[in-house]
Image (tube, rainbow, N blue to C red):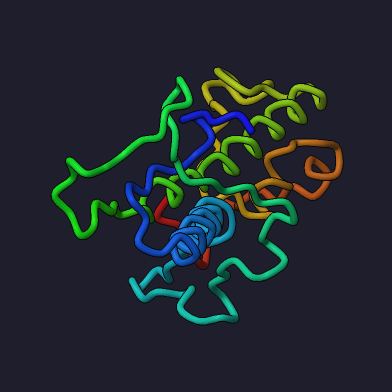
Length: 177
């Protein structure tokens, strides 16, 4: 087995590897949800609309990758065993939840790249001015919900289903992002 720092989580001297692996995997899935399905919407009067399981979605079992490789850092780049005795923490351990939480953003960035490719395939702009709409640039913010992904592709089906607001119309919900 090749040991590499770019494939492993630095947990220090893990007190309980089984718990740490669960934390690594759980934090990644939580981050994946944060960047892909957890959309916070507000009513115009300032009340939170997405406040329950019927309107606010969190990752479920089907959102977990079937192949999920997680490892803890044990060796340096030369293959030498690392030690964390210099750490001034409980049994030389480290907190491990934050890095994999943010790594969930990689799912968002992969989806964004896929949408960019689809937009180019459909003759739509991915930067600068949108064709036919002077001064409007393409923006794709997180979370990358199924609805946002579908609309961002910009294919013929999306063009045919486009709804344009009439003067004075306002949306029912407000998105903070």
